[in-house]
Amino acid sequence: MLNHELVQLTRQGDWQQETMDQLQANRTAQHERAAPGAPLVGNRWRSMRERIIGSVLFLCAAVSILTTAGIVGVLIFEALEFLRAVPLLDFLTGTVWTPLFSPPSFGVLPLVAGTAVVSLIAMLIALPLGLLAAIFLSEYASPRVRRVLRPLLEILAGVPTVVYGYFALTFITPLLRQLWPDMQVFNALSAGIVMGIMIIPLVSSLSEDAMTAVPRALREAAYGLGATKLEVTLRTVVPSALSGITAAFILAISRAIGETMIVLIAAGQSTIMQLNPLKAMETMTAFIARVSLGDNPQQSIEFKTIFAVGMLLFIMTFALNLISQRILTRYRQVYQ
Image 1 (cartoon, rainbow, N blue to C red):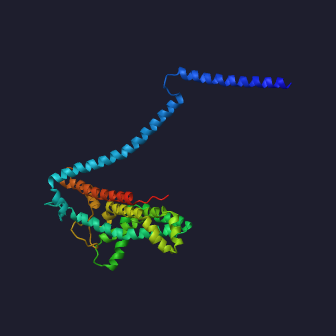
Image 2 (image 1 turned 180 degrees about the vertical axis):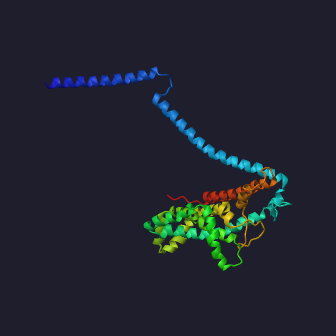
Image 3 (image 1 turned 30 degrees about the vertical axis):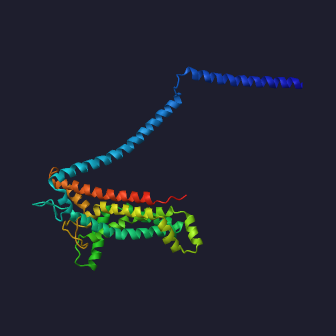
């Protein structure tokens, strides 16, 4: 009986082995009948799908690149047309900007001065308040408080800039005129203050991200040496996140320089060369917006001034962005 069972098991094993060999032979024959190097249908469709996805993603990236190139190309072409009629030195060093008057004058320094004054006021508001808010949210606030305050702070970033402009004109300016009765209705101070309030969420968010990236081990090591919470924050966390904080500051300056609606509504349209924030000033962006909506012929030299001013504005903001990237690349600390 035992020998009979062993014979049956041996035959069953041989049959299973023959079946496996036959299946393997069939698969080999199918591959041999197919064209050499030809992929299977499923592999062919998968490869085609990947190529389509890659092409779509490339087109999305190419649209943004081509759009940027087109904007820069138009600025350069139109700015060169303007500089054929106006010497570059007169444009960059002149202190009288009256392109719409007769005789015209094309010294851009009054617009640069207005932009610098408004941006400086905004930075005096946004940088310290934004950094202090980031320190509180990163180091002092409890998770519950952080969940409440962060959305409330970021609401400021969602308010339309035209609302900020009328807020500066109808609320901030009357308050400031109680302190300085000689202040003009349109002035750089109120526009700069409101612009700084608008930029606080940008500084706070980027600075908080930089401080949050500092490892907990550095904080624990400082506490182990007997440091207080304030000392840990100011001597360990902030220096460790300094590159990110500096980049946030530079991006905030770029945002202030490029702001349009607030200064267009609240800062005025005076092109007199001055640095008094209590008086009306016109910034580069406000001039571009005002002239582009005017009645000047598009091929006139007056209309082409907006491209020259826009090119100068682009160079300024582009330089600030390069400085920001340079700081991040050179001084970034990678933690593991």
